[in-house]
Length: 291
Picture 1 (cartoon, rainbow, N blue to C red):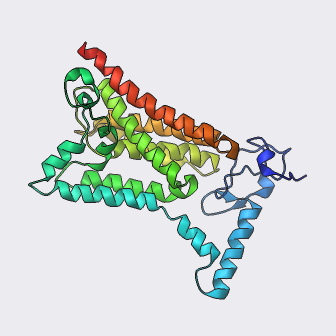
Picture 2: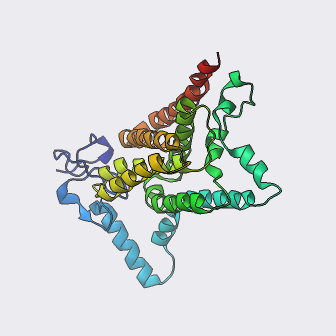
Picture 3: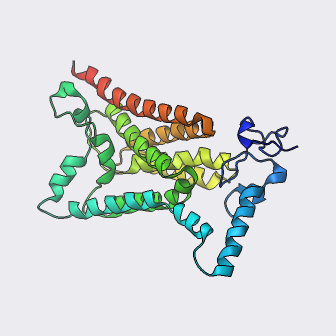
């Protein structure tokens, strides 16, 4: 039994066999596939159509010995947003090391709750909830190096799966989530670093990996180790880590529930709502302390 239109199948039912329930997605097209339709790959499984397309592209490349349609498609799957974020972040860190301007750059991009609480009298600069991910502790490079290594490792897998825009939305919203939790429960602190955004990627990978049928145990172990260091490490903002991680889970859940083509509008609306709600919480709730 084969459906004429895969999009007509309800979620969690194989698009080629609508009478077979499944919770595994093709890692390329993200359609639900049953056990019979799954072809194991190094990471996850793919459906018969994607397997045929991949094999066709590989044969074409061997015959022509030059970039073809498959090569162009793979170039489109390169994690360019991940690399762009890394380049900008590292560039900002290098500027931070310059004695004359480094302190000014850090002061202009770091986040502290008073910048989003009008009642404190500080300049209202809510964009710092995002720019905080661009600055790191200086001069020791461990902070930025660990965050960029994690971003590189996670981004190479997540960005091709989600797409460039969704991946960027996940990263930005996770950064905002980390800043929001700092504002809510640590209003007297100031933070720097992309840890909240990276934690959002890490927790999102738990949900997305599970939907793809990938073994998420290594991710869970890595998350647990990071969680321990977040609480015992000196000078570590665990609020930023937890806030980014919670938002990463929420955004990944939204992605998993709105992946159908006819629900893209709902997906955009929910993501915008999450962003607005996080900023609103950071602005209003800590402000009650200053009344």
